[in-house]
Length: 134
Image 1 (tube, rainbow, N blue to C red):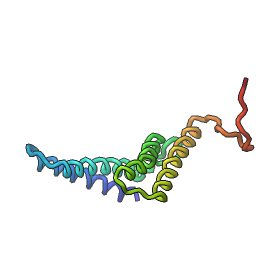
Image 2 (image 1 turned 45 degrees about the vertical axis):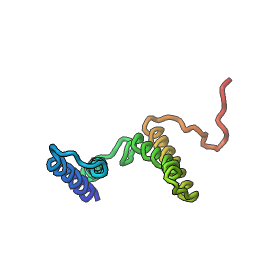
Image 3 (image 1 turned 135 degrees about the horizontal axis):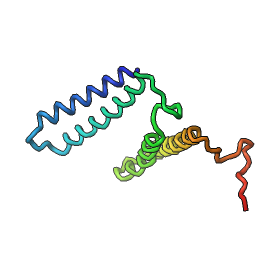
Image 4 (image 1 turned 120 degrees about the horizontal axis):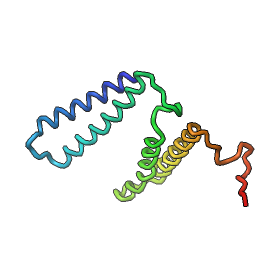
């Protein structure tokens, strides 16, 4: 799986390099430029994830992506319903699922950081409310 992701990432980055070479000195349209930037970002992401999978180098928290990358994905999920609203493509069930996925990303990132740094969970194991010192 990692070799496939690495190959896709390198292929996309090669395509971006070829497009940049061919477009040197010309001004491409905004649509094509957006496509090239998107290909570069997806290529970097797929290449880095593929490399991590191919060499089997685990992260200290045991995950594939860092908590900040997971939070960024969660932010994209949470902002997606607002984009849907702005584009007048509003679907309540899709918006709810996207918002729930964003919240889940933030919860996962926080749990990974707690596991890495050895922090105490915010809710006691017995399920009782946290006690305030006062």
